[in-house]
Length: 568
Image 1 (tube, rainbow, N blue to C red):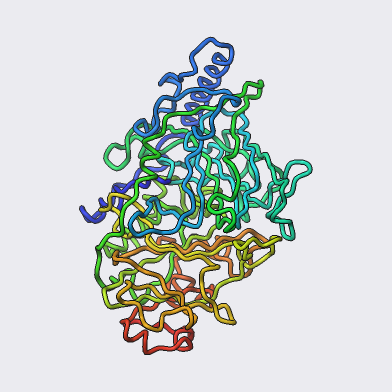
Image 2 (image 1 turned 180 degrees about the horizontal axis):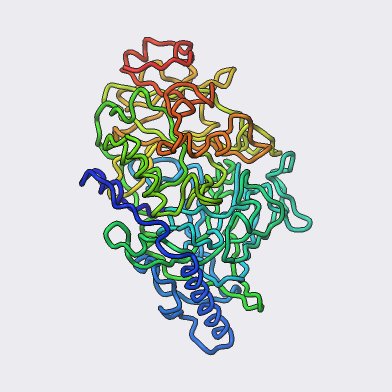
């Protein structure tokens, strides 16, 4: 679903250095705002002429934002809502079981069904209407590219500013209908329809939307977004960036996490209806041919036999977890660590690179210093790590699982808990050299993990032939087939919706601030979550262990649950 450019990682490994940091800001805000208004005015004028029958539904090139991906999106045209086919709007990646012969890319969580409207284009003042039914799943939200604040960038749709969200529990259902995500609500209610509105706007998303500030909750079904986005300096840079141009259209992300078994994989609901309406009443939607984008998302690849080695120092015994405050920042961080560039000046460089490319940073004004970032779910705390497993060895995670609403068997009501959803997914860490980027390899979610009476878990990863004889469910152990890709990157997704699905140890930005818990932060303190030892999260911190198959077979569960790291 996401088109992560491999250039950063490949550049790091092949050349041994990082790109030049762009100057921030790359253009004056007044200049960018003026350009954005001109794009909006020209588009609005064309739409009105089309409604009057004065121009073709085919949108001429000069009306489109200069900078969009013209290889993957072609033939833009206006359509009236009553003539709109939803398959021309939505791209869907359904939840699925991982298959080593056919793995998906773009860093998905396979327990989530993603709906993406990759072409969202409309003038300021237009209202986006989205109508549908609440899905039968654990979590659901709608996220729209944010109101246009030209101080922060959204490069190539995946790097930079985060979307503005409406979370399931905040959505008021239509009259006579039920929101099944509220505590105590009937999850099986038949009348479960909703309608939400996003007004396209030029302005600061955090000031326009109360819900675009922690804890990302807000009453009412209206939010402010923008279908015109600025890509920043890499929109012009043909060496490090794509160089197509500064401007782009927006997008809509909808997520259905952990569909009920009965309604797997898509929550048992149809695609949502969607259209725009101008302040003067004209209704429309703009579609394009996006087969190039679909082909990218549907291309799969088999598990690779690569990276048979022990952990490197940067993902070894001492390393814990890093909090993700942006996908671009995380890629640059991983690349710098892989090159053993971990001095203060290296971290300063990573901060400047992220600021130059995305306009984001720990000291930027809201929302550029907030946790939500492009294509991420605003309600997930993303924690990352990595490891290499050599043949004959096993990797083990131990910790305590927070409570969650156990819904997939078809729970009748929604219950409060310490979190809404929890999963651990791994990806091929050598992605610059992979045909498919962000290749999934393993994933386990909360209700698949074996727990003891205190909710403690032991998760064992190994190749099939290296599975310890005692790594079985009967012994209270969750075993995961690591496959043949030796080096993989972990993404730990901890989803919280305050206050009913949250608690003192929630890994949000208030508990784990940017400056202290992401590797490049100015006040980085590895004792919080960055060490392979219990810190802020206490027993909920997932400890990393590495040993031979034979060593694991010598151990009992009590030895693994002491909170001490075992590493050979």
